[in-house]
Image (cartoon, rainbow, N blue to C red):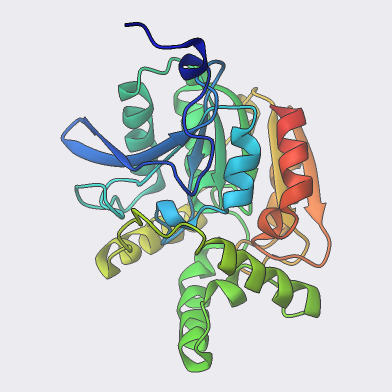
Length: 286
């Protein structure tokens, strides 16, 4: 018996309920989730330092999945994905391309947040025909100002979180203003909405490998971003302490076909703090 047309049109409709699947490619078992319509160009999410599948904001995932197929995955050696974590952004980008092609996609849109935005830049440069459009948030170019200090900032705010019994993302992603503190608490609460089939936490070894990759990215020579001709939406908060906001402005200046949005009284997680506005902008852009 053939499936009904409705089955063809959509996958799971809620991030909370999207099942975790696995896909083997090039010796790696990738853990991933997908939801939204099955037609059209899929949007592949590339995540941040130390993140697993459960670290995506449900409002952003569900908002974009309302109109586009969304695919998220754990990079090699992270969460439920097998293998050892790469120590360079370029290796992470190659793993992402391996995963994307194993799903059978010839063209995708990319949404890269923080480290994921660095990975997205490499994919767009090395596999230009694979990428249609790109959204990069809370990120910077190779050699960007202050990116090599992410390790020190991450360790300091992790210690700060332990001392105050708070999630370090409260300090790393959000400002210490009343608006930022409230937005951080709301964001962290949303991350707990999924209660079943949770992902594995990142290991200390994988976390350190990612930190080394970002540190190397921060020390790299600036790349020629004029070779990225795809339309790019560049976003950040106006007070990003992890990847200083000046990097976002620099990206917009150096990319030949970009749009810039800077959110007020917001930090690294500005797109999560202003998730309603960000989702609407992303949908219009895509």
